[in-house]
Length: 408
Image (cartoon, rainbow, N blue to C red; front, side, top):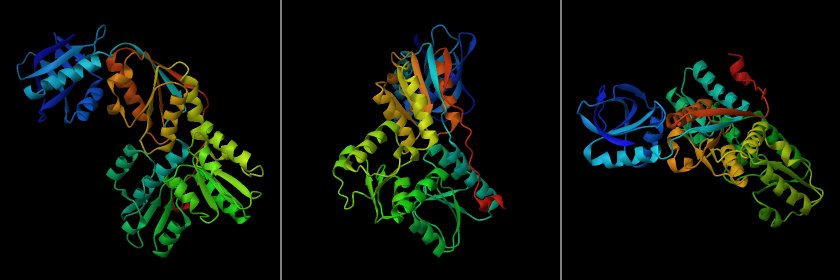
């Protein structure tokens, strides 16, 4: 039941809206682990809430307070009078979806070997170099990773014209074109290459296929950094397709000399459709699109596919510019299960959980694993949560650091 109570914040807070991480009410201490859900909701409504421990009955400000039925958990938001109605609405919306749940936890999930390597490259470069370390583009597509590295001293730039001559620059996991490498070399920069080895493999294939005289068809998403880097390996010999319709519009002069490559982070089933269309149009097509999709993308998609059979809703932890994370959302949607991409627990919305007793949970290959467990902890603030891990394969892949860092 939702109540209005006079409360006092324990400690010094200055915000007009306070979200309780705990509340002393009815003579007992009540934990509020769902606080991040309320914070996210209030932030979307234009507020800037702070977290506080609240104590009922002291007569400071008013709070909307609810105890989750059948538990020792609470939901509470204290607010100035003009914001109290909003506080009540937020607490009521989450109380309405409170209850026991099962979380089906996909495994593998979160960081892959290429992402771990790229992050470690930036960390080691920061440790081993005494000058500013520049990173061209996001090292991986996740805002939490980028923000953390920026706090540690990495300086992220979009292009090399933002980097001084002779400076140290790290290339992102998505790879760069030969033109970017040439610019860095001509300007005397020290380059630490964070390109994922699986992306490097695709670049090598692009050069090899083009070198033997083929038109190279790349299946991928226009504008993605990996695609831009790969296309730059042989721009006069490569064409990009995203859909079957793109394939049907292709005009290739020598249909006997056509090869196919694939962006590493695509969905397997969608890529197969495009590759099949290519083979029908160009029977002499060489190469295998499926071999270019990285092991981590494949594993995460297969793990999610298996748990969608039992899930009422799927949550994918990952940033909006993460291709492999977006493909997980698309996959769940194609399986007929509503899916939502969230950067972190604060992005969760109560309406997504309405009627959802079983939640599928996974994370893209660039999302930090701790974000997944923060989601589980917050859901546990709405009622008992049983976590069942669905493991499909154990990943043992490891990529070493570049020689520029190993020799220091």
